[in-house]
Image (cartoon, rainbow, N blue to C red; front, side, top):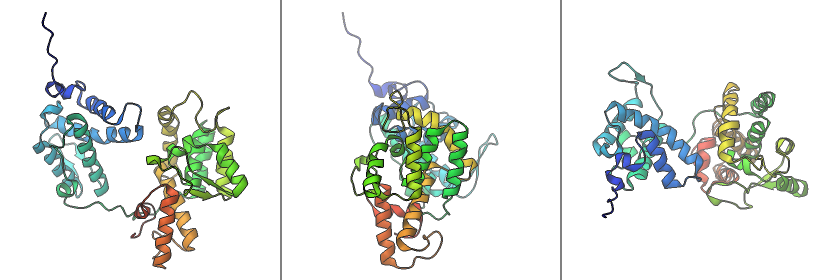
Length: 330
């Protein structure tokens, strides 16, 4: 009896990842990055790609096999139009204008998702060429994450029963942690280090494996307060914010999803904005003057030193990254 020949993935609808285009793309991302790895990256791409999926649907494309370079370039032209004016479809629906950085991110997501499905770069689109403008990583808007607003938001979270979410928010603003770092940080170790030296290192949950003592932060009154509160609300028997039955993904979805809405009510646009507030405080303490978002840069040498330290305290390897948090030229 002859064995039935297996149909190659390239000949299957959506390259064998599923019948629905959006679902298929998410499965392809999971295959590329790992089903249980890089959750935040996969989630971000999964949100951004919705716009491209809708664009494909409006052009009659529901199968990734029929996405060609002409369609991808048309998507780039559509995004370029939205940089300067709202885009109106034939049915009257209007898509509002978007920022240059967001347009670059949208194209980057398309490139990543198409590579995940096809495993080639034949449909790669250059964001610079498609949009006709380069992305600037230098922040120009004022930071909206002062300590008073952060504490107000934390109080509202506590009142709504989200104590651990409030702990993550306070740790992020006080210590400059990413959300993942605040969730996984060994709080007992930090408290021991603070008691012994007045400082503590950010070691657990770091991005890109940057686990090193160079990211050691001085513990002031606000830092101690945030750390003590986190220890008081963590689950019994746990060294971090998570309980033994929790995982990072479920915590993101359940706890931090509700906390983000409270942050916005208090005028704080995102959790990342809290890190910008920490970065600004650290920069101004070093230069003993305003950040580039609040005033002109004074001593250029001191400015460079401050940027290098701020980038290191945030867990980045390049000093230039500080510009996306505190503004000015690096």
